[in-house]
Length: 209
Image (cartoon, rainbow, N blue to C red):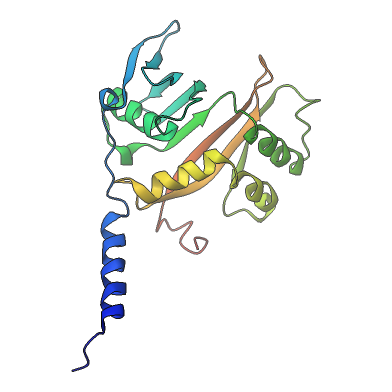
């Protein structure tokens, strides 16, 4: 029987360690992140504040399995914005993380704003001349959307969504299925929606890397 040398054993141990870590992270409750959630001005709105300079308005829609985030501010990055969003989702929906199908962000900031604009232009839309631009779906498995997709996947909101799928318990079988982008009619804000799919779906099993 052939025995593994020390370097081979170390490599195998590292592989098992990485597999054990990937997808194991649990979402902390809002209190552990220093978040405070209260009823907002409008129906369904929750105002989120914190002791670490994080704030946002959120709308959790249990039936649509979605969370909408508006005017998110996290200048010091003392906590991860996406971890705060996941924590709010679990707390307010009383569902699991794997029940979350959709995260949307209004008021997309720079430099992501410029990335959204580039994606809109690939679809023949001018965000500086058209207002509003209603939601345009950019799908992962659409050849017609490839150029727009390649822009959007570089944005911080896309990278954060990928980290959600890679790191968190209950999301290891998920992936970014599509984006919805547009321009808000009231404030000229760019918005983006991130939709998660399930790996192994019949419609996607031939398109995932």
